[in-house]
Length: 200
Image (tube, rainbow, N blue to C red; front, side):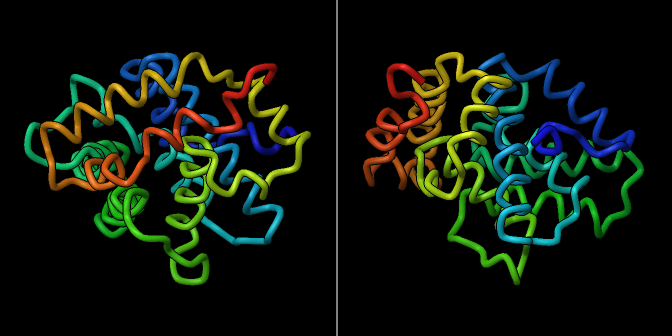
């Protein structure tokens, strides 16, 4: 099971982890690391071939625009995050096509579900983020995987901290995806996520 915690062996992956450590609060850093673990676990369970480096960097950077240094007052956070990731990837020496793919994967994590056959990295990020944020699809993961992920990367008050940022995004950007989700009962789903149940 250690494979779900092993980052790709590349300079870009190492740099993405360093950036996330620098800018994301502990609860958000752990969310990003759990996201990658859920994604890899699901990919292994249902055999979804994917680009591991691309997925890892997307998972580590997907919520950076929720942090004050990268928050946009006009763009939805996932779109702002896509731009941040594009700039990161340029610095990492990725070509334009790969930079665009990274930004696309991050933007799509807040959009309608993407089939694995059409876009495996976006699909895996969506599955992982949904499980970690609201518990959606958590039954895909065996109990031993859930326990291992939560032991390695504790929640650290994720639900309350995340909802503060999500509400702020929704209030300032009422047309963004986060605002639509908040109007649709997202907060209740986040606070009732089984990952945050007492005794976990």
